[in-house]
Image 1: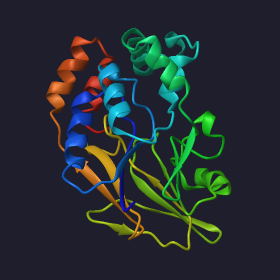
Image 2: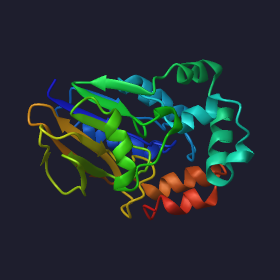
Image 3: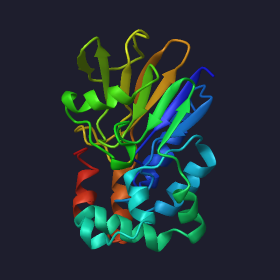
Image 4: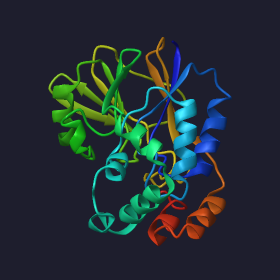
Length: 244
């Protein structure tokens, strides 16, 4: 296996997902892995889930999948998250919900670990927004490389001895020092939050031990129209156009 595409945080945005899958087809990719949060926030949870089931392996569970299958009152989640889960439960079949319930929290692929949020209590879905939050994650990481999502913000975090450093993505492949553990956040397909509204995913070249962050234009206005028709939360409709 030489090249793997890693996608995460689709959040029911079928227009973004279809654009990313079309972009992946322009590369020589051996497999596509999904790091969770297929549903939630967006208007097309069923269509997104069907595409992910068809095109991706392995797939790990995100927190929005957990929200959908456990008896959580969407009102307790509030706002955009609550409305997204309410809509997902209306759209998904019992068979699809049963499939979601069987998703693993952690997987391995080509010597790398896959998790939605953090290896520090993966079922708690801890956010890694600051370097100090990555310390506990690295205490649990047993492979040289781990891929995650959850924050919707693409970044590379490297453990160098006792220190933890970060590197923001840039164009082209970025080599990773195999002597140091790395955590690569692959960003978000359906709802980026790094002030770039384009869909984001990562290509991992296992032979080069390098990653490339790919940004993909998609029809945001069409996605917003879908969200409006499905009565998704107004904040989500606005934020997908701004990448916030």
